[in-house]
Amino acid sequence: MTWEPRPTPEVSPETEPYWEAAADGRLLLCECQDCDLQYYYPRARCPDCLSGDVEWVAAAGTGTVYAHTSTQIVSEWPEEDLPLVLAYVELDEGPRMLANLVDCEPDDVEIGSPVEVTFVDTEEPDVAIPVFELRE
Image 1 (cartoon, rainbow, N blue to C red):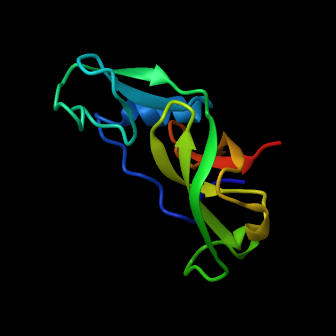
Image 2: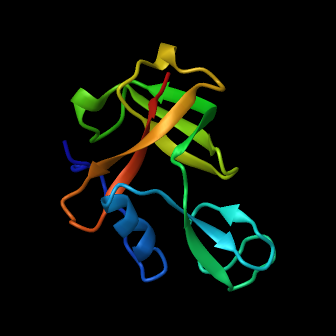
């Protein structure tokens, strides 16, 4: 399974390491070296103190569902991937990220459900999409 025909992200020099790591099956976060904040979505400046002293760090790839929703109808979404379940996942490191939950029924998802990252390949060799699965 690949991500297409869904849109793939535009890779910029700022986000390129993130997408390349995802293509290798690794989830990265940014960490500010001045205030120690770990954050998501990747960007060159810390959203808290605006420092440019930021490094990439590996995330465990585990967390819990903070909030979720689902829908049965999405224009141009592959029918075999419906219903679409979206969740804010609170990573064990603290940041929250919006992502798809895959291989689950909407009724199986609860606030606090433990999840683990997995990646869906795209037609671009250096880009994969992080999604989450429920874990026991």
